[in-house]
Image 1: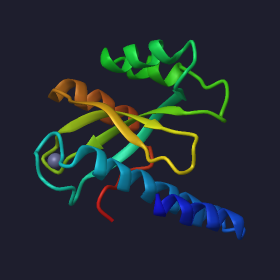
Image 2: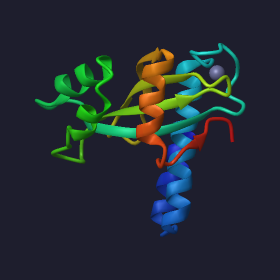
Image 3: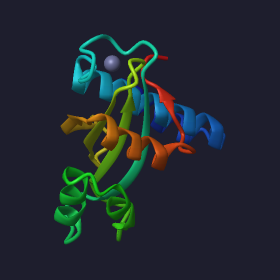
Image 4: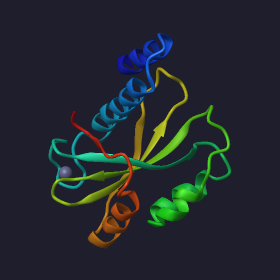
Length: 149
Ligand SMILES: [Zn+2]
């Protein structure tokens, strides 16, 4: 993937932490747009939509099932408590998507360790008002990134 190669070359020439963070955010936004095609809540494009990553774990660990179950059961705090053992493998990342229509979706992504593989969307769910609010409350101070830069 082109963006990721650019990312690697930035790392190679000793880019600043800010540059790397910005590039990482853009890669995720790009892959989320590709994976979702349209907003799962409003079925529109991604203008004025934001995402925030809030939890992650290794994709092939004993904790993987616990993590996915916590997300499906909307037990956000439990998902947050599932810690990673090893950074050098594929990751499952949970993100919240905020739609300008005030709706919220939860998204489960697979971020492969292989630098030439894209992030893929495994599943997503448009949350009801109450569940969406609990996720927003939890992610209030998180890094909300525009999906459409
Ligand atoms: Zn939307």
